[in-house]
Amino acid sequence: MKSTGLMLVLAGLGLVVIGLLVYSGALSWFGRLPGDVRWEGEHTRVYVPLVSMLLLSALLSLISFVVRRFL
Image (cartoon, rainbow, N blue to C red; front, side):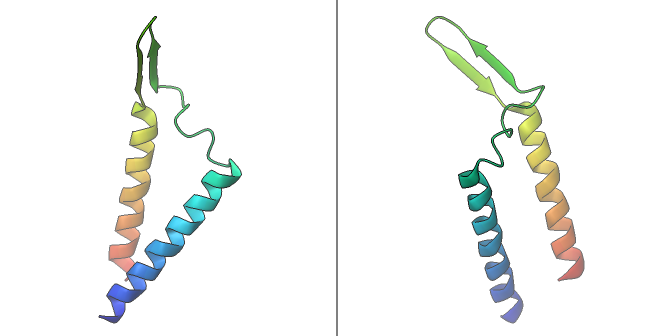
């Protein structure tokens, strides 16, 4: 039960840090990386953030690995 509480606290702190980064504008580059597909027609906009989601997936996989390895 103690490790579950610790994981919840760490997840909450992580969300606070991410929220502060988004609020401050430090993550304004996310979603505008080379490889993110953006197509704008006359009446249509299509946006597919391929590279951004690959980067996010790799980061979350790394965090998951570290948490499982050391906690």
